Length: 130
Image (cartoon, rainbow, N blue to C red; front, side, top):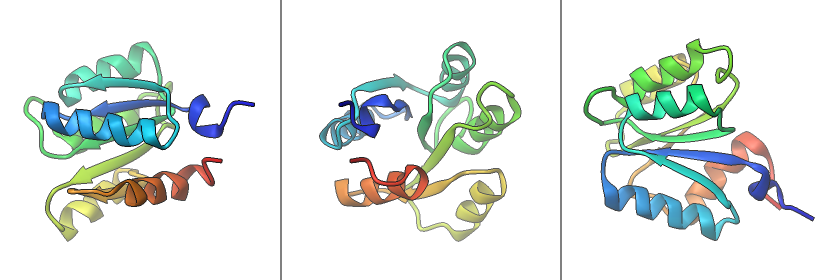
């Protein structure tokens, strides 16, 4: 039996290599196996347009296209608009959290995150990963 986590295609979008590695590692520990990475919102939007993923975990602060611009691109494309989107934010910036919610983010995860917090953020959208 495949777990729910194994069926979910995840796209990680972050311009920091270390951050991408930490996110990928945490996702693998939670049972995710279909993981793609992108270095910025532009690249992320291209990947989503070519090959829609079920879940996007994206950093906010990135060059070229920030997390909010990327979220708008995902939400405005009919092929990807239903994807779950979790925004990563370094600051406890309330204005950013509100903007992300207004643009259709499903959840916000503060950096540095723990695996438990990531699991909770994902399960708030998909239900239990078991």
